[in-house]
Length: 443
Image 1 (cartoon, rainbow, N blue to C red):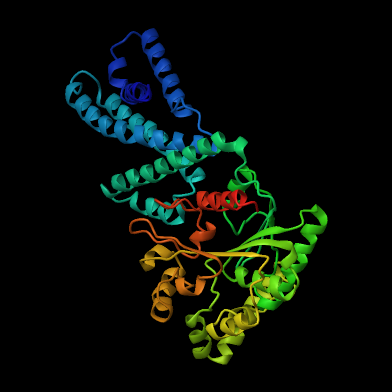
Image 2 (image 1 turned 90 degrees about the vertical axis):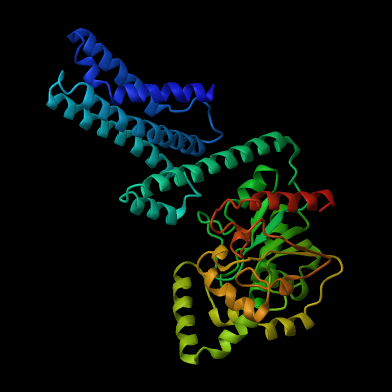
């Protein structure tokens, strides 16, 4: 049915775009009626290019954009052939002015179809990103290259439609099971240099997916940059607040990057062990970063102070009461982490587990991690652009995620930083399974 509809829409558009020379031979009433009917069909195809309803309005608009660009690519190619045929066949029967008017009308109508589809995709696609949007605009001026990039855009957007539709359908099927409704609520703890903003979620699309599957979620809300002990104290206050206000008794912590170190400090040094059931660290440098220590040692004191002052001033303006850039960075060095491990024992009443990913090539890390990955590899070995795999091992169970195919899984990918659908690794589904596993074990 889908392909029959597409064929009909293609024929409708071709007729509407290339009809002028043919209707010239009809009586005036028939001519007007034919043009009116084809114009209505043209509008219908542009307003409702697909019949199937997508799970969300965004995906619906994205799917419609893909369909319109597919129709454009076919009808524009056919229209070029038809316009040449009209010029050859009717040049002696129809005035040149009519033929040129038909060419102008064809160009305008095809342009309408193109921009109708392109704007829908540009306004709704997440996976297209800034890079492809800019490159598409630049390639649009280069013959043949523009056609290749048009199909690239259609493929990217089409894959997004399929992926998100399957995701929504899966969630609809298992909604009643609430597989992420754990005994204790989840506390998501962010890493260094970020904050828990209301409208710019550090964890990307992950929290919404967990909530959709039954999870109750809270956020650490600690400062973006501070010494591990200071951040641990902030987290301890946050945990007390959650437990007091909700009566939940304990929380399950899922912490990314430095957030894992902050969480361990809250448990070991600020009395949070009775209130934490589990701690799962994601790409956390438990044994520090040799790379960070090297940079701090080589950077001139004036440069370090200048960077720190600039960062601290900027973060105060967006809510951090007392940011400390240098303390945060120093706390991630190998020597600082190894010394801290000596005085930060794991509590036997808390389940500690860890997860780590890595990248194979620098370009998989995205800017700016693509610049640091080879440097970190030189000092620390296998890494995600910032943290080495060896440094991330902690607790009773360690999971090393193997990148699918040639694609790596970077430090940012593990918190859905770029909102990117990675082929072979669904970050949202990874967290759903992680939390579902906690539930199955009684946490």
